[in-house]
Image 1 (cartoon, rainbow, N blue to C red):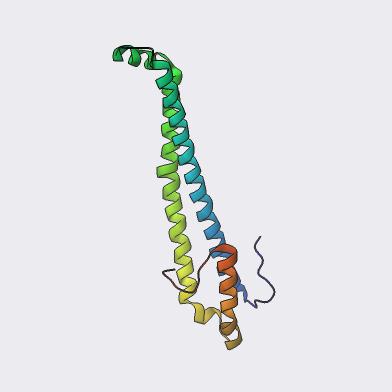
Image 2: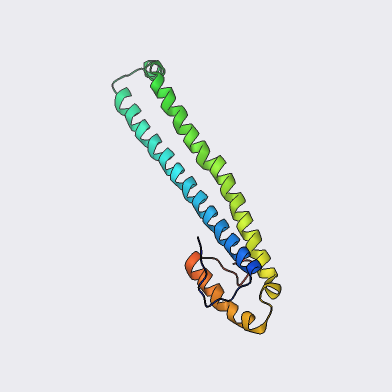
Length: 149
């Protein structure tokens, strides 16, 4: 669980919003990493499978015999189907989830920026918020200075 250093005096609403933006950032990064990993696994698997196909089909001279050899083994189709499924998971399923998580993160981040005046009400909190922003940038790479940053 995320804990804020004691130097930041935050009310519960601000704390909950900041915790939510941190969690959304972590979720976005986790989905992005999963998508990249699955894409790399699919491409590595495809490369290995193609090497296997080339090495084993090189001795066969006629294309029709190569196709017959490939389709004669159900494992070849299963591997091909598996590689396509992994690639689909990476590109369509997790990429879509990743984009949604990114949009949710940026929407909440922008909301915090827009409501800064309401969240840091007194002058002491307002003047000290930059230390909190620097801490969030350093620890979680979350920019609360500008909406487009």
